[in-house]
Length: 112
Image (cartoon, rainbow, N blue to C red; front, side, top):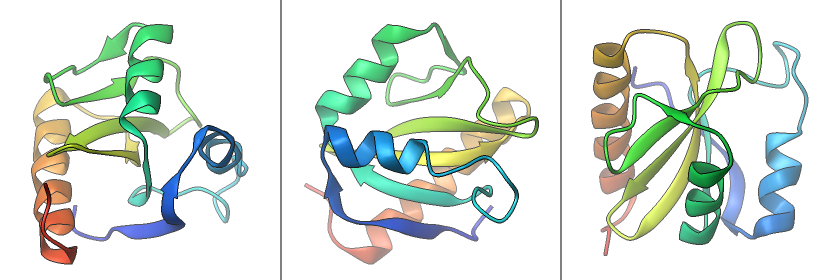
């Protein structure tokens, strides 16, 4: 996947993170590749509330699906945290998506 769309402005705090997660569940409101930056604390929070799926150490998928076809993935790129809508798939599909997203973020600006 290389079709990524930023749906947030700046780094989303807790309130903004939940607003973005709850933006809606219809196809016109949520699609694979939509992402926003959040805080590392929110990444930790979501890691601790439900068992993760496809946990890689720096990325995981929420075990609770967002829609029939999509889940929210939480990805650390350097010291920055992101939430990315991903299609349900295999771990190898997820690893490829994480690699493509990392490359996308690193192209946007240097990562600390």
